[in-house]
Length: 264
Ligand code: 48H
Image 1: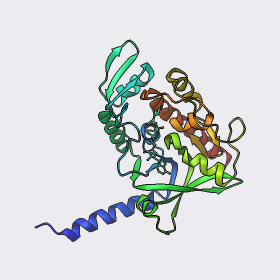
Image 2: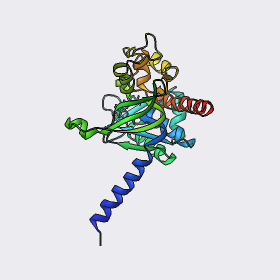
Image 3: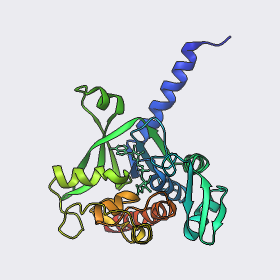
Image 4: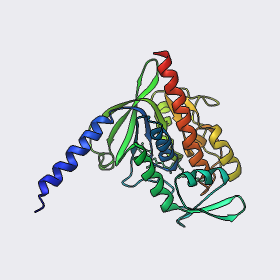
């Protein structure tokens, strides 16, 4: 005989335990698009306590939609190596252009990130950052997306992280909070958000990894947000750069974690 109350207690207790544990993390990632989930995978795989918050009900950001709702993505050679690592099937369309199913890709990135040990919380929006230690980003301010959508006046909760990754895509929301609210100066030309430039796939993809940097103390920018913040072009439905940027963001975060350890 199934007891509805046992089911309800199982879900509530297990979620609350996970959520409580997630209040203190090594790395907190904002956005479960391709770059955020890839970063989560590489961090968790290396034993780093990684928590990811996603505003939407579903994960994947812009990936499931492929190109103009045709649910395929294209990656280049470097991206293909990451697809292989995630066991995502791909096929060569022309030399140097590999196609993959955008849903298979999204599902695999999510599954492997969670299996590696990353915690992904959907339906939670990041609405602010916590600042300490001479203007270092040291955590995130969270609220239910439902609260945001209903415009309810409900105060948020806060979690602590040694490093934060802004993987919020075109909107680069965490960087905007730092610039607009904290009046923080980013490590960009002019100190602000430089703004995404019009479509140019080759340059956009080329710039993405070099733009995946610590843009403010404790804050790394990854994926489309990296080009939006550092003033590089968009690239359309080629996703190799997002995957490589996610992996790069994990490497940068690991470097910062090592420095934080040494200096304490
Ligand atoms: C919680 C948030 C918040 C918040 C946003 O847009 P994404 O897919 O991001 P990337 O950078 O991994 O991938 C970009 C790619 O999808 C894309 O748009 C490309 C390649 N465009 C090229 C072009 O020319 O247009 O995912 C970002 C995720 C989304 O799921 C948001 O819901 C989420 O971040 N998010 N989550 N709190 N404040 N803001």
